[in-house]
Length: 335
Image 1 (tube, rainbow, N blue to C red):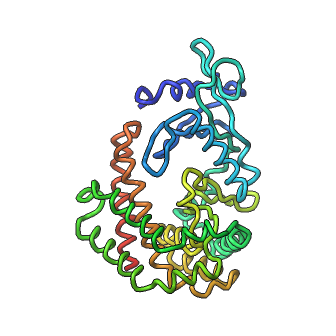
Image 2: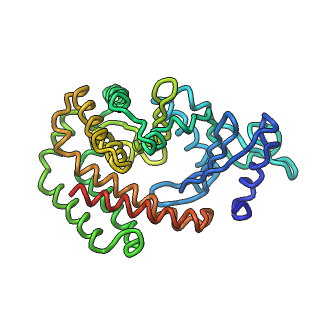
Image 3: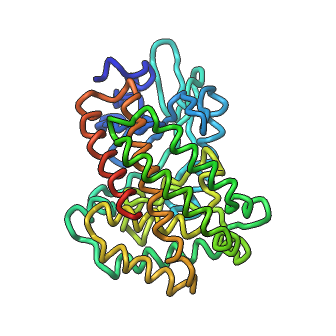
């Protein structure tokens, strides 16, 4: 409901707040952002929340992370990310991109990508081909090979850091046991995760020594890939380096898992096989299911978080419960 939205967001639903008067304004919410859609552009405004692993509670922090989002996403989608624009208020009027008045918020401005060309939409319609996933694999392989790596980034491939990530997942989902995940499934996935890391320490060590830990995208699922004028991979993680610095195998597993989620296991295998062929990363299959399980659990967790968002309707939360359960089921399927 519009009345539940913050005042500044309500004001920005008025087309008169934008430079091109007369266009329609729609809104989409994520756990961390309000996304305002006009005919040609997207304005992404960060919610003033502190979720532990991110802190957007001050205007200065939101401006900083808006700038960081633009810089990082221009690596894989340079023509889409335009920049950071101010939202100002003068008397009782709110404007976006105008310099008059007091700055009350900041937004990431993007060119609007065609919804019908998004990979998740195409997967639902069974319109993604083996050649399309091969092209994604090639783009991702080139990106990973050129992505930054150093001693500090390598530390994020160590078991201590991976354990921190997985334990954070489990601690943050305890409250959802009995709702989006059962007690039995929770224990099963947690036990598998611990055992795999204990039994494969040498594998994780080799991933580091072979330079497989990189500054990646960090949130590579199907909804963040658009087949338009080439392939645009957007909306990477900017708020916490720990979630972006990772094994390239974890990133590949994320998308492969999500393709599985849409019921296309053959395409998932084609994507992984193409990536391995491009990179000669012969040990990636040995770690694939571990990271598929991890990434599916993350998706279940993030969907569960939406249940605590006061700005999301009860109807939407009902759908969210089913999506979260599906991802937790998928995580267990990789064991």
